[in-house]
Structures are given as structure tokens and as C-alpha cells.
Length: 125
Image (spheres, rainbow, N blue to C red):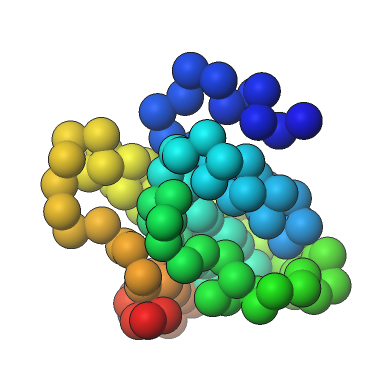
């Protein structure tokens, strides 16, 4: 069902709120040979990564079977700037992708901690 929603797209931006929905979207993007830019938030933290169709993807973060379908944001709340920060990084990745820049967050997960002002890229390979 998700595949027809991607018709005509050049890139897919994941801003969904459940792990299951993210995995469904990733599968649809792969089926359509589209890059996926993943973004997620929880409290003061967020994460961003770019997944090309042949790249390892969300399974590198979540494993093969999705864990509980809600994150810590349900318990801790999320301040308004956190999704704005993650969205800005996602749009930067999208701009790099569409302008054929090579410095994408492929195989790396960017973890943003807005409480402590820290950003760390973790190699997933």
C-alpha cells in the first residue's frame, strides 16, 4: 500500500512515529529504488541517517524484529526544538543527496543531543 504513495518521488523522508511504520516505509522505498532519509526523536535527542536502496538500513539500529512500537518520548516528552533540529539535519541530507554531494550519512547514524549540545556520528558498518 505504501509503494503507490511513493510514485514520482525522488527521495523519501522518514518522520514517522513508530518503528513498524518506519520499517514498512523503508521496504517500500527499497522496492521503488528510492533513497530514504531517516529521522527520529526522543526527548532531547534525535537521530538522522541516509539509507540508499542497497545499504543496510534500519535493521542496523532496530534489528530484524521491531521492538515495542513506541519510544521513550511517550514517557519523557519532547521539547519543541528537538524535531526542528532533526528536521534541519534531514533537509541538509536531502539537499546533499539531490545535489549529488558525496558526504552523506550512509552507514552512519548521527545522534544529536540538544540537552548537552553534542552530536556524534556512529559507524554502523
